[in-house]
Length: 378
Image 1 (cartoon, rainbow, N blue to C red):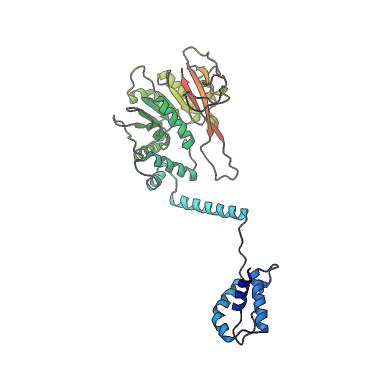
Image 2: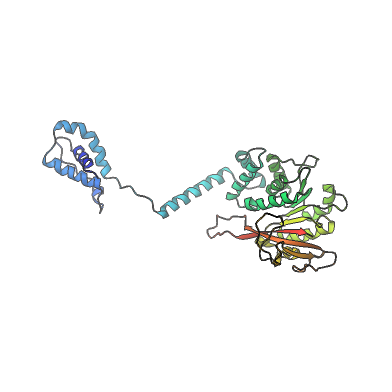
Protein backbone atom coordinates (compact mmCIF):
# COMPACT_ATOMS: atom_id res chain seq x y z
CA UNK A 1 0.00 0.00 0.00
CA UNK A 2 1.32 3.47 -0.87
CA UNK A 3 2.29 5.80 1.99
CA UNK A 4 -0.44 8.30 1.17
CA UNK A 5 -3.06 5.58 1.40
CA UNK A 6 -1.72 4.44 4.76
CA UNK A 7 -1.91 8.00 6.00
CA UNK A 8 -5.49 8.35 4.88
CA UNK A 9 -6.46 5.16 6.67
CA UNK A 10 -4.61 6.22 9.80
CA UNK A 11 -6.12 9.68 9.84
CA UNK A 12 -9.63 8.37 9.29
CA UNK A 13 -9.35 5.70 11.94
CA UNK A 14 -9.44 7.84 15.07
CA UNK A 15 -12.14 7.01 17.62
CA UNK A 16 -14.65 9.62 18.77
CA UNK A 17 -13.61 11.90 21.64
CA UNK A 18 -14.06 10.37 25.06
CA UNK A 19 -13.93 6.80 23.85
CA UNK A 20 -11.16 4.25 24.10
CA UNK A 21 -9.01 3.54 21.05
CA UNK A 22 -10.53 0.95 18.69
CA UNK A 23 -9.45 -2.67 18.87
CA UNK A 24 -10.06 -4.91 15.86
CA UNK A 25 -12.51 -7.77 16.34
CA UNK A 26 -11.09 -11.08 17.51
CA UNK A 27 -12.14 -12.68 14.23
CA UNK A 28 -9.79 -10.36 12.37
CA UNK A 29 -6.83 -10.84 14.76
CA UNK A 30 -7.11 -14.61 14.65
CA UNK A 31 -5.70 -14.78 11.13
CA UNK A 32 -2.12 -16.03 11.03
CA UNK A 33 -1.24 -13.55 8.27
CA UNK A 34 -2.71 -10.05 8.54
CA UNK A 35 -3.61 -7.91 5.54
CA UNK A 36 -1.93 -4.51 4.87
CA UNK A 37 -5.22 -2.78 5.66
CA UNK A 38 -5.40 -4.48 9.07
CA UNK A 39 -1.84 -3.43 9.91
CA UNK A 40 -2.61 0.15 8.92
CA UNK A 41 -5.64 0.22 11.19
CA UNK A 42 -3.56 -1.08 14.11
CA UNK A 43 -0.96 1.61 13.52
CA UNK A 44 -3.64 4.26 13.39
CA UNK A 45 -5.11 3.10 16.68
CA UNK A 46 -1.72 3.21 18.43
CA UNK A 47 -0.98 6.68 17.05
CA UNK A 48 -4.33 8.08 18.11
CA UNK A 49 -3.91 6.70 21.63
CA UNK A 50 -0.60 8.59 22.01
CA UNK A 51 -1.71 11.92 20.51
CA UNK A 52 -5.41 12.28 19.71
CA UNK A 53 -6.25 14.56 16.68
CA UNK A 54 -8.41 17.71 17.11
CA UNK A 55 -12.14 17.27 17.65
CA UNK A 56 -12.94 18.98 14.32
CA UNK A 57 -10.99 16.36 12.45
CA UNK A 58 -12.72 13.63 14.39
CA UNK A 59 -16.17 14.93 13.52
CA UNK A 60 -15.39 15.02 9.81
CA UNK A 61 -14.03 11.49 9.65
CA UNK A 62 -16.11 9.55 12.09
CA UNK A 63 -18.45 8.06 9.47
CA UNK A 64 -15.63 6.93 7.22
CA UNK A 65 -13.81 5.38 10.15
CA UNK A 66 -16.61 2.90 10.86
CA UNK A 67 -16.64 1.68 7.28
CA UNK A 68 -12.88 1.28 7.08
CA UNK A 69 -12.66 -0.49 10.41
CA UNK A 70 -15.36 -2.92 9.38
CA UNK A 71 -13.49 -3.57 6.12
CA UNK A 72 -10.41 -4.56 8.12
CA UNK A 73 -12.29 -7.60 9.41
CA UNK A 74 -13.40 -8.74 5.95
CA UNK A 75 -11.72 -11.76 4.39
CA UNK A 76 -9.12 -10.94 1.77
CA UNK A 77 -10.18 -11.38 -1.88
CA UNK A 78 -9.79 -15.01 -3.01
CA UNK A 79 -9.55 -16.34 -6.57
CA UNK A 80 -11.34 -19.72 -6.79
CA UNK A 81 -9.10 -22.66 -7.54
CA UNK A 82 -9.59 -24.62 -10.76
CA UNK A 83 -11.42 -27.36 -8.90
CA UNK A 84 -13.79 -24.85 -7.30
CA UNK A 85 -14.44 -23.21 -10.67
CA UNK A 86 -15.16 -26.59 -12.24
CA UNK A 87 -17.51 -27.47 -9.39
CA UNK A 88 -19.32 -24.15 -9.83
CA UNK A 89 -19.67 -24.78 -13.57
CA UNK A 90 -20.97 -28.30 -12.92
CA UNK A 91 -23.48 -26.97 -10.41
CA UNK A 92 -24.66 -24.41 -12.94
CA UNK A 93 -24.87 -27.10 -15.63
CA UNK A 94 -26.91 -29.36 -13.35
CA UNK A 95 -29.13 -26.42 -12.49
CA UNK A 96 -29.72 -25.58 -16.14
CA UNK A 97 -30.53 -29.22 -16.88
CA UNK A 98 -33.02 -29.37 -14.04
CA UNK A 99 -34.66 -26.21 -15.34
CA UNK A 100 -34.83 -27.62 -18.89
CA UNK A 101 -36.29 -30.92 -17.72
CA UNK A 102 -38.89 -29.12 -15.65
CA UNK A 103 -39.95 -26.87 -18.52
CA UNK A 104 -39.70 -29.43 -21.34
CA UNK A 105 -40.54 -32.96 -20.11
CA UNK A 106 -40.19 -35.75 -22.68
CA UNK A 107 -42.50 -38.65 -21.96
CA UNK A 108 -44.17 -39.25 -25.32
CA UNK A 109 -42.97 -38.49 -28.87
CA UNK A 110 -45.25 -35.47 -29.23
CA UNK A 111 -43.60 -33.76 -26.23
CA UNK A 112 -40.92 -32.37 -28.51
CA UNK A 113 -43.45 -30.30 -30.49
CA UNK A 114 -43.97 -27.51 -27.91
CA UNK A 115 -40.21 -27.09 -27.63
CA UNK A 116 -39.80 -26.85 -31.42
CA UNK A 117 -42.53 -24.23 -31.64
CA UNK A 118 -40.78 -22.21 -28.94
CA UNK A 119 -37.20 -22.65 -30.17
CA UNK A 120 -37.46 -22.87 -33.98
CA UNK A 121 -38.72 -20.61 -36.74
CA UNK A 122 -41.67 -21.91 -38.79
CA UNK A 123 -40.64 -22.74 -42.33
CA UNK A 124 -36.92 -22.70 -41.48
CA UNK A 125 -35.58 -26.25 -41.74
CA UNK A 126 -32.17 -25.26 -40.37
CA UNK A 127 -33.65 -23.85 -37.18
CA UNK A 128 -35.86 -26.91 -36.72
CA UNK A 129 -32.90 -29.26 -37.11
CA UNK A 130 -30.86 -27.16 -34.69
CA UNK A 131 -33.70 -27.25 -32.16
CA UNK A 132 -33.88 -31.06 -32.39
CA UNK A 133 -30.13 -31.23 -31.87
CA UNK A 134 -30.49 -28.99 -28.81
CA UNK A 135 -33.29 -31.18 -27.45
CA UNK A 136 -31.09 -34.24 -27.95
CA UNK A 137 -28.44 -32.72 -25.67
CA UNK A 138 -30.87 -33.27 -22.79
CA UNK A 139 -32.69 -36.36 -24.08
CA UNK A 140 -30.26 -38.71 -25.92
CA UNK A 141 -31.97 -40.08 -29.01
CA UNK A 142 -31.38 -41.83 -32.31
CA UNK A 143 -31.32 -39.05 -34.85
CA UNK A 144 -28.43 -38.88 -37.28
CA UNK A 145 -27.27 -35.49 -35.95
CA UNK A 146 -25.15 -32.78 -37.60
CA UNK A 147 -22.11 -34.89 -38.52
CA UNK A 148 -24.01 -37.78 -40.08
CA UNK A 149 -26.66 -35.40 -41.40
CA UNK A 150 -24.01 -33.62 -43.46
CA UNK A 151 -22.95 -36.94 -45.00
CA UNK A 152 -26.58 -37.80 -45.72
CA UNK A 153 -27.20 -34.50 -47.50
CA UNK A 154 -23.93 -34.73 -49.43
CA UNK A 155 -24.88 -38.14 -50.85
CA UNK A 156 -28.45 -37.18 -51.73
CA UNK A 157 -27.29 -33.97 -53.43
CA UNK A 158 -24.77 -35.94 -55.51
CA UNK A 159 -27.16 -38.77 -56.35
CA UNK A 160 -30.19 -36.56 -57.19
CA UNK A 161 -32.74 -39.39 -56.93
CA UNK A 162 -36.22 -39.03 -58.39
CA UNK A 163 -37.37 -41.39 -55.61
CA UNK A 164 -35.70 -41.82 -52.22
CA UNK A 165 -36.69 -44.32 -49.55
CA UNK A 166 -36.09 -44.02 -45.82
CA UNK A 167 -36.66 -46.86 -43.36
CA UNK A 168 -36.98 -45.40 -39.88
CA UNK A 169 -38.50 -41.90 -39.80
CA UNK A 170 -38.31 -41.31 -36.04
CA UNK A 171 -39.19 -37.60 -35.73
CA UNK A 172 -38.38 -36.60 -39.31
CA UNK A 173 -34.81 -35.35 -38.78
CA UNK A 174 -33.27 -37.42 -41.58
CA UNK A 175 -36.32 -36.94 -43.79
CA UNK A 176 -35.92 -33.15 -43.58
CA UNK A 177 -32.28 -33.41 -44.61
CA UNK A 178 -33.07 -35.73 -47.52
CA UNK A 179 -36.05 -33.74 -48.76
CA UNK A 180 -34.22 -30.45 -49.11
CA UNK A 181 -31.56 -32.05 -51.33
CA UNK A 182 -33.97 -33.78 -53.72
CA UNK A 183 -34.10 -32.54 -57.31
CA UNK A 184 -37.20 -30.74 -58.61
CA UNK A 185 -40.04 -33.26 -58.65
CA UNK A 186 -38.12 -35.67 -56.42
CA UNK A 187 -39.98 -37.50 -53.66
CA UNK A 188 -39.18 -39.29 -50.43
CA UNK A 189 -41.21 -42.12 -48.93
CA UNK A 190 -40.33 -42.70 -45.29
CA UNK A 191 -41.50 -45.77 -43.38
CA UNK A 192 -42.01 -45.58 -39.61
CA UNK A 193 -43.13 -48.52 -37.46
CA UNK A 194 -44.88 -46.34 -34.85
CA UNK A 195 -48.06 -44.54 -35.86
CA UNK A 196 -47.57 -42.06 -33.03
CA UNK A 197 -44.01 -41.31 -34.10
CA UNK A 198 -45.10 -41.02 -37.74
CA UNK A 199 -47.70 -38.42 -36.76
CA UNK A 200 -45.05 -36.39 -34.91
CA UNK A 201 -42.68 -36.60 -37.89
CA UNK A 202 -45.35 -35.21 -40.22
CA UNK A 203 -45.85 -32.23 -37.91
CA UNK A 204 -42.11 -31.64 -37.60
CA UNK A 205 -41.68 -31.68 -41.38
CA UNK A 206 -44.61 -29.37 -41.92
CA UNK A 207 -43.26 -26.96 -39.32
CA UNK A 208 -39.93 -27.01 -41.18
CA UNK A 209 -41.73 -25.92 -44.34
CA UNK A 210 -41.47 -29.25 -46.18
CA UNK A 211 -44.65 -30.33 -48.02
CA UNK A 212 -45.90 -33.62 -46.60
CA UNK A 213 -48.69 -35.86 -47.85
CA UNK A 214 -49.81 -37.99 -50.75
CA UNK A 215 -50.54 -35.35 -53.37
CA UNK A 216 -48.35 -34.35 -56.31
CA UNK A 217 -47.02 -31.29 -54.46
CA UNK A 218 -45.78 -33.31 -51.49
CA UNK A 219 -42.05 -33.88 -51.16
CA UNK A 220 -42.34 -36.41 -48.35
CA UNK A 221 -44.83 -39.14 -47.58
CA UNK A 222 -44.58 -40.76 -44.16
CA UNK A 223 -46.08 -44.25 -44.10
CA UNK A 224 -46.81 -45.88 -40.74
CA UNK A 225 -46.23 -49.62 -40.52
CA UNK A 226 -43.58 -52.31 -40.22
CA UNK A 227 -41.10 -52.30 -43.08
CA UNK A 228 -41.79 -55.96 -43.82
CA UNK A 229 -45.46 -55.10 -44.35
CA UNK A 230 -45.00 -51.84 -46.26
CA UNK A 231 -42.20 -52.76 -48.67
CA UNK A 232 -44.27 -55.29 -50.72
CA UNK A 233 -46.77 -52.53 -51.54
CA UNK A 234 -44.28 -49.69 -51.80
CA UNK A 235 -44.14 -49.79 -55.59
CA UNK A 236 -47.87 -49.08 -55.64
CA UNK A 237 -47.57 -46.40 -52.95
CA UNK A 238 -44.81 -44.67 -54.91
CA UNK A 239 -46.49 -45.08 -58.26
CA UNK A 240 -43.40 -46.80 -59.68
CA UNK A 241 -43.73 -48.45 -63.02
CA UNK A 242 -42.41 -51.91 -63.77
CA UNK A 243 -38.62 -51.98 -63.75
CA UNK A 244 -38.22 -48.64 -61.97
CA UNK A 245 -36.18 -48.53 -58.76
CA UNK A 246 -35.36 -46.08 -56.01
CA UNK A 247 -32.32 -43.93 -56.59
CA UNK A 248 -31.43 -43.61 -52.92
CA UNK A 249 -32.20 -45.70 -49.83
CA UNK A 250 -31.48 -44.70 -46.22
CA UNK A 251 -31.59 -47.45 -43.59
CA UNK A 252 -31.92 -46.07 -40.06
CA UNK A 253 -34.44 -48.36 -38.35
CA UNK A 254 -33.94 -51.58 -36.37
CA UNK A 255 -30.42 -52.83 -37.08
CA UNK A 256 -31.31 -56.56 -37.36
CA UNK A 257 -33.82 -55.51 -40.06
CA UNK A 258 -31.19 -54.01 -42.37
CA UNK A 259 -30.26 -57.21 -44.16
CA UNK A 260 -33.72 -58.80 -44.58
CA UNK A 261 -35.19 -55.49 -45.72
CA UNK A 262 -32.39 -54.91 -48.24
CA UNK A 263 -32.88 -58.43 -49.59
CA UNK A 264 -36.64 -57.77 -49.87
CA UNK A 265 -35.97 -54.56 -51.79
CA UNK A 266 -33.59 -56.42 -54.10
CA UNK A 267 -36.21 -59.07 -54.81
CA UNK A 268 -38.90 -56.43 -55.43
CA UNK A 269 -36.66 -54.46 -57.78
CA UNK A 270 -36.72 -51.40 -55.51
CA UNK A 271 -32.92 -51.64 -55.26
CA UNK A 272 -31.23 -52.15 -58.62
CA UNK A 273 -27.96 -51.26 -60.33
CA UNK A 274 -27.37 -47.55 -59.77
CA UNK A 275 -29.18 -47.38 -56.41
CA UNK A 276 -27.15 -45.87 -53.58
CA UNK A 277 -27.83 -47.43 -50.16
CA UNK A 278 -26.77 -45.62 -47.00
CA UNK A 279 -26.97 -47.49 -43.68
CA UNK A 280 -26.45 -45.82 -40.30
CA UNK A 281 -25.04 -47.31 -37.08
CA UNK A 282 -23.31 -50.22 -38.77
CA UNK A 283 -20.69 -50.32 -35.98
CA UNK A 284 -22.76 -49.14 -32.99
CA UNK A 285 -25.02 -50.93 -32.23
CA UNK A 286 -23.81 -52.69 -35.38
CA UNK A 287 -25.10 -54.66 -38.36
CA UNK A 288 -22.40 -57.25 -39.14
CA UNK A 289 -24.57 -59.49 -41.33
CA UNK A 290 -25.63 -56.51 -43.42
CA UNK A 291 -22.02 -55.37 -43.83
CA UNK A 292 -21.02 -58.84 -44.95
CA UNK A 293 -23.78 -58.80 -47.56
CA UNK A 294 -22.66 -55.49 -49.09
CA UNK A 295 -18.93 -56.13 -48.66
CA UNK A 296 -18.36 -53.58 -45.92
CA UNK A 297 -16.98 -56.16 -43.48
CA UNK A 298 -13.72 -56.35 -45.49
CA UNK A 299 -13.02 -52.62 -45.43
CA UNK A 300 -10.11 -51.18 -43.53
CA UNK A 301 -10.84 -47.54 -44.28
CA UNK A 302 -13.21 -45.32 -46.17
CA UNK A 303 -13.29 -44.02 -49.71
CA UNK A 304 -15.56 -41.85 -51.77
CA UNK A 305 -17.86 -42.36 -54.72
CA UNK A 306 -17.88 -38.71 -55.65
CA UNK A 307 -14.99 -36.64 -56.92
CA UNK A 308 -13.72 -33.86 -54.74
CA UNK A 309 -14.57 -35.37 -51.34
CA UNK A 310 -11.96 -36.43 -48.83
CA UNK A 311 -11.29 -40.15 -48.56
CA UNK A 312 -8.81 -42.76 -47.44
CA UNK A 313 -7.91 -45.97 -49.21
CA UNK A 314 -10.21 -48.97 -48.96
CA UNK A 315 -9.26 -52.59 -48.46
CA UNK A 316 -9.00 -53.39 -52.17
CA UNK A 317 -6.78 -50.37 -52.82
CA UNK A 318 -9.01 -49.14 -55.59
CA UNK A 319 -10.33 -46.07 -53.82
CA UNK A 320 -13.93 -47.03 -54.56
CA UNK A 321 -14.72 -49.56 -51.83
CA UNK A 322 -14.99 -53.33 -52.12
CA UNK A 323 -17.21 -55.05 -54.69
CA UNK A 324 -19.43 -57.77 -53.27
CA UNK A 325 -22.21 -59.86 -54.74
CA UNK A 326 -25.01 -60.65 -52.32
CA UNK A 327 -27.36 -63.53 -52.87
CA UNK A 328 -31.11 -63.40 -52.66
CA UNK A 329 -30.94 -65.59 -49.55
CA UNK A 330 -28.87 -63.01 -47.69
CA UNK A 331 -25.51 -64.74 -48.18
CA UNK A 332 -22.40 -62.88 -49.25
CA UNK A 333 -19.13 -63.67 -50.87
CA UNK A 334 -17.28 -61.71 -48.19
CA UNK A 335 -16.04 -58.98 -50.49
CA UNK A 336 -15.05 -60.61 -53.79
CA UNK A 337 -16.95 -60.27 -57.04
CA UNK A 338 -18.25 -63.82 -57.17
CA UNK A 339 -21.48 -64.79 -55.44
CA UNK A 340 -24.82 -66.48 -55.68
CA UNK A 341 -26.27 -66.50 -59.18
CA UNK A 342 -28.74 -63.69 -59.66
CA UNK A 343 -27.44 -61.64 -56.70
CA UNK A 344 -26.64 -57.95 -56.88
CA UNK A 345 -23.10 -56.64 -56.53
CA UNK A 346 -22.19 -53.69 -54.31
CA UNK A 347 -19.22 -51.44 -53.93
CA UNK A 348 -19.09 -50.24 -50.35
CA UNK A 349 -17.26 -47.64 -48.31
CA UNK A 350 -17.45 -46.79 -44.62
CA UNK A 351 -17.75 -43.21 -43.39
CA UNK A 352 -16.46 -43.15 -39.82
CA UNK A 353 -18.22 -40.81 -37.41
CA UNK A 354 -19.01 -40.40 -33.73
CA UNK A 355 -21.98 -42.32 -32.34
CA UNK A 356 -24.82 -39.82 -32.12
CA UNK A 357 -26.43 -40.95 -28.85
CA UNK A 358 -24.47 -39.03 -26.21
CA UNK A 359 -25.18 -40.46 -22.77
CA UNK A 360 -23.49 -37.64 -20.88
CA UNK A 361 -25.59 -38.29 -17.80
CA UNK A 362 -23.43 -41.38 -17.18
CA UNK A 363 -20.31 -40.58 -15.16
CA UNK A 364 -18.14 -43.01 -17.13
CA UNK A 365 -19.52 -42.09 -20.56
CA UNK A 366 -17.02 -41.77 -23.38
CA UNK A 367 -17.71 -40.92 -27.06
CA UNK A 368 -17.81 -43.99 -29.28
CA UNK A 369 -16.77 -44.48 -32.88
CA UNK A 370 -19.47 -45.45 -35.34
CA UNK A 371 -19.78 -45.58 -39.12
CA UNK A 372 -22.23 -45.20 -41.97
CA UNK A 373 -21.88 -47.63 -44.85
CA UNK A 374 -22.35 -46.29 -48.37
CA UNK A 375 -23.08 -49.00 -50.93
CA UNK A 376 -23.45 -48.55 -54.65
CA UNK A 377 -25.45 -51.29 -56.35
CA UNK A 378 -23.49 -52.30 -59.47
